[in-house]
Amino acid sequence: MQEIKTVYKFWYEYYQILPKNHRHTLGQKVDNLFTDIIEAVAIATFLSQEEKAPYIRLAIRKINTLNVFLLILWENKSLEDKKFIWLSERTNEIGKELGGWLGRTLKQNSLAKAREK
Image (cartoon, rainbow, N blue to C red; front, side, top):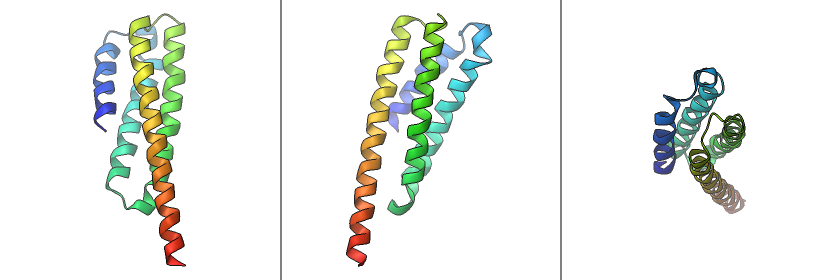
């Protein structure tokens, strides 16, 4: 959760100075995706083990979509190279962490179901 908050703070500072033609379109989409990811992760954190997976999957889908929109902003020259690289590296890492969390969750859920039988 800490990493996504750090990345969002960086994004939000840049979002304020994003060129106007993208701030209210792709920029707003990216901002919404960040907040959706934070929300999904926060919800999953407080759920029982059996209830986590759908929220983790949602966060993974959102992070993948976020990466596409960041790429489009960069390709349209609305996101500087260094900022794009920094954001992409961190969002890719967050995606890997979410994938690992999902894998552990699914494994624990399947072990729990096997014990019930």
